[in-house]
Length: 393
Image (cartoon, rainbow, N blue to C red; front, side, top):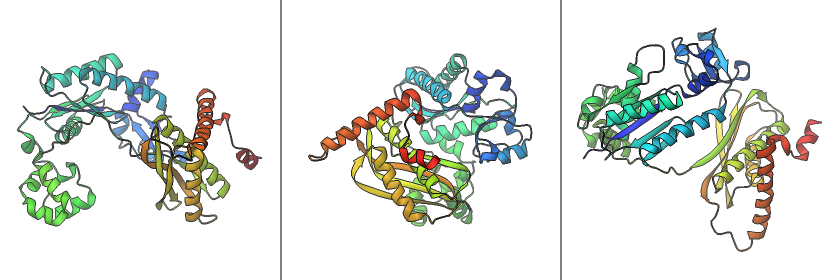
């Protein structure tokens, strides 16, 4: 029996949620994101705005240039997380085999259920539409690869200036024929550089790639060549993973204007480290590798990392390592556009502590827990470092 995989994507999710709180936005060209005078970017945009060429991840200033009457709505992540949680609850009500990819996207394995894939997709879409008033599109196929591509094409083919709310089904056995006429850029794993190399071989469609000898692709591209040959023929046996391992946790900020003051930059690093630390503790993890991301005024971006001797979830440990990386990378007075701090190399926080570091770690843990509780109840600014206050006087 062939698998039945659904790929669900919520249509213009942030915008759909905002329209629920402000119905006057419906049918209008608007974007959710930051202000153009603060280097804001478009996080999501309505389908009316897309008619003017506005797209996600576009600088808000560019979006306004393309659509001068564009309305800008600030984001409300608490609303989006709440709505996403309700959507995922509906998915898990249909099947326990749900792999959440992001706040608005998921795979479902519905193999073995009594109804066919199209019927299940229609029923799922109707429930999300009716109960949560959110539009969503679905791709249905025998694999994750083909289901996602089907969803992309279904949405692209939808007519009108509203959400697509589309369903596209690829019958089992028809995967290769479905993929064959599509440009190779549609295939997972084909980025700009790989596409350029394939074009030099006069390979322009997925079907042409499927007919190319797998041995030659492996010789030219290594393991990727073998994988591309298999994917081009619609072969993908990856399972729907119900639990996704956290690889890294990070926070970053883009400044409204380039910063050159070292004290301001170091204060920002500590603030970002506190955000990372809190999320790590909420996930019951500890990490060993601290990463710093820096973007200069000319958009050049660098990253540096430092591996700690002992895994940590404490703000100070993360901040101290990030500050060390910063001091080694930054030249005094050099303008900084973006700062980011991250932690990876995780292990479960419940793992055995070292024989000699247990008492100190426990003391730091109690202090960190108390700070988390205060910030949760009264806001992030309820506790501030004395050095921060002195800097601001």
